[in-house]
Image 1 (cartoon, one colour):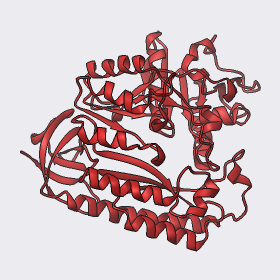
Image 2 (cartoon, one colour; image 1 turned 180 degrees about the horizontal axis):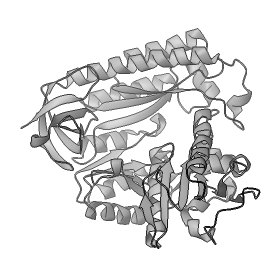
Image 3 (spheres, helix red, strand yellow; image 1 turned 90 degrees about the vertical axis):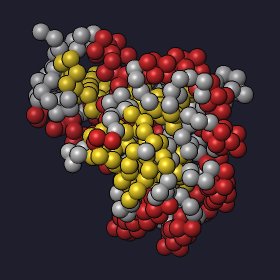
Length: 435
């Protein structure tokens, strides 16, 4: 009888692409992959540790799986496992804890899948961040379909922002070779995907061996391949160069959409965070993008409740974002993380105030998205349709990241069609008609 495995991912798109790679290891050895939540012989959790809630969710899921399927062999990997291996190993039901480096070779650490006696502590295999070299060729699909694939080109980070645990969990910045990336991209294309999203911890920091082979060089190589679309995932403002902007402007394949972390619109807070820019650079960049690529979609990460963020600091951030021509915000509430510099900073913000500020910025995001959507009414856009909804609509995204819905008889899944955007309803998907 064949063995079964179930996998679950917490956190970023990079984690999802890596979970897909882990799943392939099991499939190659004859395992049947079952949906998360179903009874299974093995369960693998690829964890996240970017916030306190992520760590808590990791523990909750482990306990739930053990409670509902007590005979399942439980493997925990990912950032939370890397940062807190002892805590994870002590959770009842866990059999194996693997660090970021080890998760790419799961079967090197699995001699048997027999469930451990509950009195025995889980086996732990962790490589220190100074010794991390394994990269892992990873890509995954969005919503498990053949529409959009997330391809990992870079891992780790050298920035050491004071609030962030990612460098502690993933190590130094390192990049996949351009030859390997092209090879993986061709496999994705042959599998029928229409869009590839380039992902990494710090995607804009892509560099391989020789100092002058950077992200822009890779973009030119990828542009030669036979695929409809590429999208660049989150990219640091100081790394979004004029070269990259002009390339995206001229390319017929790279999407006119950028997601750029800001974190704060107050220079004092940016300094405490050890970000590598001031708000003036960010503002200049956004207005430059709008000038060069008129219909560009711009998403922004912002972090509220950082230590010493006074009411004046928050208002500065709010007012700064309100005036910027951005399309939407991803709002994160600051969470204390051990072993970060920010953990010991004075001026802790009351959690209630953090939540209130987060709510205000999320409301601003709706205003921004509503305005951006309305500005695109009566324009023609190419939409990659992804999934059919129960209400009879099929949805997808434009190149500038507007969510569009159309009746199911007008488009099929994994089809790119030219659509006239006809009706907006706030920040909800825009209605469109095939041309």
